[in-house]
Amino acid sequence: MIAIIDYGIGNLRSVQKALEYIGLEGTITSDKEIILNSQGVILPGVGAFPDAMDNLKAEGLDLILKKVKDENKPILGICLGMQLLFQVSEEIRSCPGLGFIPGKIKKLYGEVKIPHMGWNSLNIVNNNPLIKGIKEADYVYFVHSFYAEMGVKEDLIAECSYGIQVPAVVGRGNVYGTQFHPEKSGDIGIQILKNFGELIK
Image 1 (spheres, rainbow, N blue to C red):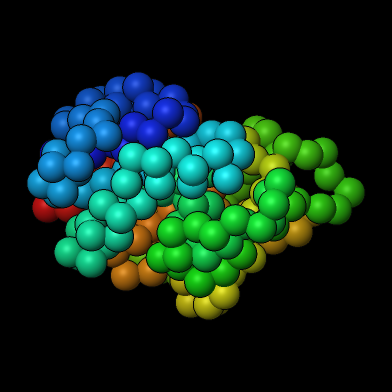
Image 2 (tube, rainbow, N blue to C red):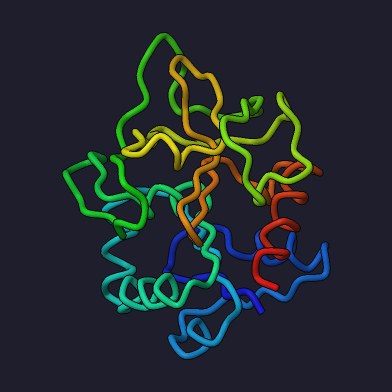
């Protein structure tokens, strides 16, 4: 069973439906025992970084996620959920994140429309089980205004070009993140969720 963390932010049902489509059980929950007893965790999210961290801390879910990480169970952050995995964000104010992946969340910039919304192609940087079966230039769906400035280049799995090079898939140990929405990215996103399912077995 995969725990889909419910902390008041994000379209959790769309992630659950995508998991159901590929035969994986996803439970939307904020129950600490269910999360700790799961085989893996998905942390979705849309909205503002400080609000999301405040919500996680209010429920004690930041500490639960650290326990899940320390138990070496796979964690997948999606969109804002991916950004929360990093050390700090400059969105609205300087706000500490979960600190699972070194780096900082910064505002997108350049001669591009912000937010970055729509389909964009992936440039694979490092091979990783999360992107098994994904090819160079496969398209996925993004909606975001901030990006991750990587602290350790080896943690970058894939990126896309949007004015700057934007980290699209990241991973460090048992912690993974996608800046795009796999549940909205057609067959490519489904393949990534299947790969995450393989990681929890």
